[in-house]
Image (cartoon, rainbow, N blue to C red; front, side, top):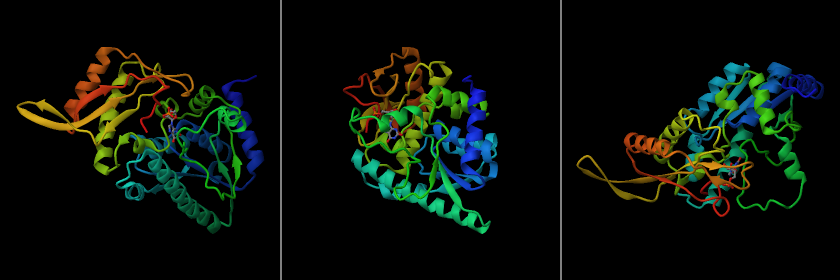
Length: 326
Ligand code: XMP
C-alpha cells in the first residue's frame, strides 16, 4: 500500500542498503525537495550525512534561517554553512543581462559548492572515512522530463541551485525519484519538517538575483526582501497562498517614478506583484487576487519600504509572459 509512512520506511531501507557505512553529502537550497531528500537520508543514516548550505545571499527574508536553524532543529542533521554572500555580490556587480546573471550565479554556485565539498571531504578523511554519495532531490517529473524528449525548449537557462558540478565523482542517492510534489510534501510533513519549508512555493535557484531588474546590489536586495516579505505575509494572512502557484515580487531597480508623500515629492522605485495560477509552471494565468488584499499589500509596501513609491500588478498570462521577469 502506498502511504506516506510506507514511502518513508521503504526509502530509509533503500538508502541504508545503497550507502552502507560510507559518508554522504547533500546540498540544501532552501527548497522543499532538497530538504525532504536530506531529511530522509538523515533518518536513514544519521551522522554519515553532512548537509551543505551555500548562502548566496539571494534568498528571501527568513529563508537562510529556515535552513540553518529550523531544518537543523527538525532533523538533527549536521550542516556545513558556506557564507558566500560577498562572492555572489562581487560576481554580479554591474551585471544587468538576465542570461548573464543566471550563468554567473550558476557558475559561482558550483565553485562555492565545490569549496564546501572539499571541507566536508577533509573532515571525513580526518575520521578515516570517505564521502562516496551525493543526495539529489530529483522528483518523478524531473526524471520524465530529462529522459523525455525535446518538447520543452530551453527558453531560459534554469539552474537548480544544488545542481551538479560536471566532474562530480559521487554516486547519487535520489530518494524522491518515484514521487510527485504533493507526495514529497507529505513525506516532509511526516518527517517533522516545518510547514514553512514543506509548503514553500516554487522559488528559482538564482533567487532574488533575477527579480531585481537591473544590477544586483546589497541595497537593492534589502529593498526587495522587505517588499517581498510584506507581500508574502499578507498573502498568507489572507488564506489564499495555497490558491496561488507562486507570487514573484519584482523590483524595477533601474526605473524611478515621481510620487508624493506628506508634503514631499518622492522619486522611488516600482515594485511589481506577479501572482500566478498554474498546474506545472509551463503555462500560467495571472491570479485574480481580491482588490482588498492587493490594496493592503500596496499600502504596506509603500508605507514600510521607503525606497518604493509605487506598486503595480502584472496581468499577463504565460505565454506570452514568463512567470519570472528575467
Ligand atoms: P518561467 O519564468 O520560465 O518560470 O515561467 C517557470 C518556473 O520555473 C521557476 N524558475 C526557476 N527554477 N531555477 C529554478 O530552479 C531557475 O533558474 C529558474 N528560473 C525560473 C519559476 O520560478 C517558475 O516556477
